[in-house]
Amino acid sequence: MDQSNNKTENNTRTRRYFISRRVDRFFMEVYRVWAFNARFFREVFFPPYEFREVIKQCYEVGVRSLPLISITGFIIGIVFTNQSRPSLADFGATSLLPALISVAIVRAMGPLVTAIIAAGRVGSSIGAELGSMRVTEQIDAMEVSATNPFKFLVVTRVLATTFMIPALTMYTTLVSLLGGYLNVHQNEQTTIITFFNQVFDAITFLDIIASSVKSVLFGYTIGMVGCYKGFYSSKGTEGVGKAANTSVVTAMFLLFIEELIVMQIINAIRGI
Image (tube, rainbow, N blue to C red; front, side):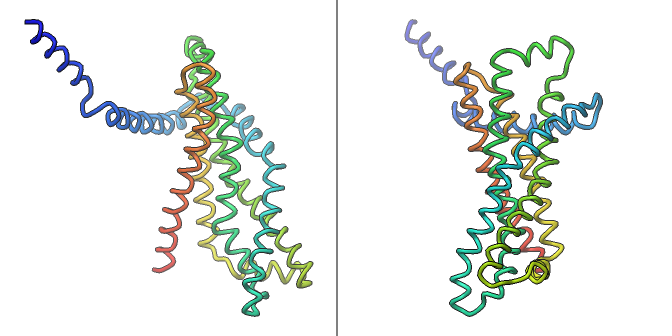
């Protein structure tokens, strides 16, 4: 009798999971991510609209990132020019350096570098901020006080990153091109008019559209990942640190996947 009871108890324990614990958790996490994104699109179109909070978050994401973005973009332009010159000099094609710089920066380096910097600075900040609010039960207090915490905390931050990352990308691209121009002018004595004529001759409207689309997608990903990790953080102060860390790692991983997918789509459109 005792053996049969033990078997029944063991069977109920094993049947707690539909497939296995890890597989069930994976699919539950996928569903929760999907529901989180669906709730964002549902909340963003209905009032009340938190315009002041959106503007505040745009300032935090955009303006406060300008010093770091400026330095990084300028250095990237100089470094990429220095690295590319010897290869072109071997073929006597240093005159193509402005065109090479523009194609590399506008198509790939500008959006991706901006997104990576924003993921490290903004994504971790969002994850840590929302994580600390969850741990200290501030989010629960907002729900009790008839405030929609999802709209006030998540929607505003995702909108801010979605709006500001494209703007920062354009700024980074300009600063990188200026850095490249200074390096080219120092070595080849190229005028700024000649340099930027070659820059704009090398890129197409499709390149600008692709860069803008990637920037919007990158901004949405950074904001959504940071908000998701912070909104569902737990385990006290340890959970806050984990939310900040996983926000950066997950966002960067998704950025590279999105870069690969968009690049393949754009290359297919160019081939048509």
